[in-house]
Structure formats: C-alpha cells, structure tokens
Amino acid sequence: MADWGIKRMNVAPTAWIEATRKALLLRRYTARTEAAYVGWLQRFLRFRRTMPSASEVESVRGFLTRLASGGRVSASTQKQALSAIRFAYAQGLGETLPWLDGFTPASRPPRLPVVLSPGEVEAVLLNLSGARRLAGMLLYGSGLRLMEALTLRVKDLDFERGTVVVRGGKGDKDRATVFPASLHEEMRAHLARVKRLHDRDLARGAGAVSLPGAFGRKSPTSARSWEWQWVFPATSCYVDAETGERRRHHYHETAMQRAMKEAVLRSGIGKRASCHTLRHSFATHLLEQGYDIRTVQELLGHADVSTTMIYTHVLQRGPGGVRSPLELLGRDRSEVRPGSK
Image (cartoon, rainbow, N blue to C red):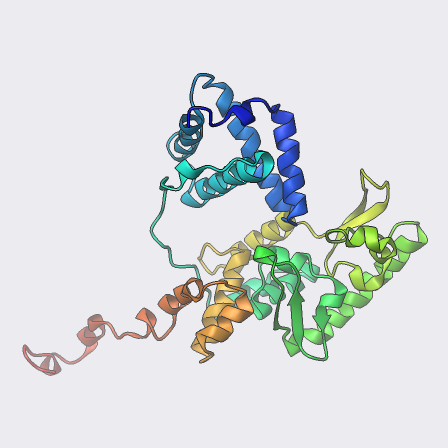
C-alpha cells in the first residue's frame, strides 16, 4: 500500500480525464453517463488539490464524506460519484481500489413512488399539447423512461405488432414494450408532420441526426435516412463540431419536464408528479389489472424483480383496499357495541 497511487501521481489530470473519457466511449456508455462520470472526476481532482499531503485512501474517502455531509447530496448521488471514481481509477489508470470494498456509502430508506389514478393521468395529459402530449401518452401507455421516449427513432415503432422497441436503454439493454393501439392514428399523423420537416431539412442541406456508436462511421448516409430520424425532433438544427454537419437533435428533456410540471399544476390534482410518475402509474395500473409481475418487469426493463415489487405496495387492493375502522362510526350506535362484530 505504500507505493499505491504512484501511477496516478505520474499522470497529468488532463491525461487522466481523457483516458477515462475514451474508456467510457469504448464501453459504449451513454453521453449522459460520460458527462456525469467525467464531471465527478473533475470535482474529485479539484478536491484532491486541497489535500496535497493526504493518501489516496484519505482523499477518496474524504471526497465521498464531504459530499454526504458538507454537500448534503442524496445517497444515490454519492453512489454515482463512487461509481465514477471507481471507473476512473480502474479503466482510466488501470488501478483498482480494493480498499473501497469495505466502504459503506450513504443510504436512505426506500420510498414509495407517487402514483396517479387513471383519472388523474387523464387530467394531466389533457393539459399537455402537441408532441409533448403524445410523448406523455407514450410514457404512460408504454412505461417508458423520459429519455427512452425522447430518443425513439422512426424505425423503433412497430405498428403491425403493436410494440415499441427501446434500443440501448438502461444498462445498454434492448427491450420491447407495448405500443397502445389507441395511439396509432395520432402517431401516424405526428410522423407525417415530422417527415415533412425532415424533407425540408434535406432540401436545405441538413436532415442528419447523430447515430449510435461506430454505426455512423460504417454507414454515414444513414444519418439522413428517414428510419433513423427522431420521433420527437427538436425545433431547431445545430452544427456538429466534429463533422460540420447541420443536424437536428431530439426534443430536449428539460423542455418536456417543464411542460409536465406546468400540466400537473393546471390539472389541479394536488400531487407532486413528474414525467417518471407516468411510468410508475403504468406499472401499478398493469398490476391492478391482474398482469403478473414478471410481465411488468420485462416491459419496464428492470434487471431485478425486486425493483418491480415496489409497485405492489401502492396497489388499490393494498392499503387503499382496506376498510378503516373509522367507517364504522357512521353506523347506528345500536350496531356498534363493545364486543359486537
């Protein structure tokens, strides 16, 4: 342990960051994960400069402790920071952190998800409009995560089979989920509008989108193909810094989150609901309809069924289906006597 960390000390911070970034790209981590991990490494390096005489053990532990105490971050945020530092050492430097195996990160008790009733879902969706309403209907009707919905491509919608194919979802896994038949007509009309926008982009020398992994290098012409276009494109184009192409990004998640927040307020449902609440509601309502939990797990893309089990705690036939003893107080006094049933 005495010489542990010499390798790191001989590597410039910029070189370490670049090596970590390349390792993330090589392992096909998403752009969001790449940005998060590199960001945590940069924050750790800044913190490390405040403790020049500390050992590697002390610096990493001190950084994680600072996040939990001084930074007051959530347990999940601290866990992400720990994962980022592990990755940076192991893949960016080729150094393992065996002494972190015994480190216990902050934890929080499990929380029940916010779930809307079908009527509340309808009230929220009615307060969304245009493509945002259609995206919201997919979040609830297909159980998609927000970024899964916004990064859908035209080819991912199968009208014949009634399925939505999620490519490279959480954990870089593909899955298929239900595509509600009630959405088909509205989605076809939406795609017709997107196709007209795409044709105008092509006529102006634009019309390209980013492609996953190395596929863009193998088939550069696919970037302008209709099947690879976003189902929910952004309203404006941008110029890619590397290629100089005029591209169109997908609809930005913050715009959808803002629209959802406003829709919840206008609906007057009185709950703190978000885009992810629609996914929670999808799972809960399927279980209430009698679908088995393994089916719901597959549709949601959960790696472990224990993650899906959380929805069993908010079913109508759970606490909401129990008759409270307070209901007895409305009965005739002669019916409620000590020892009577």
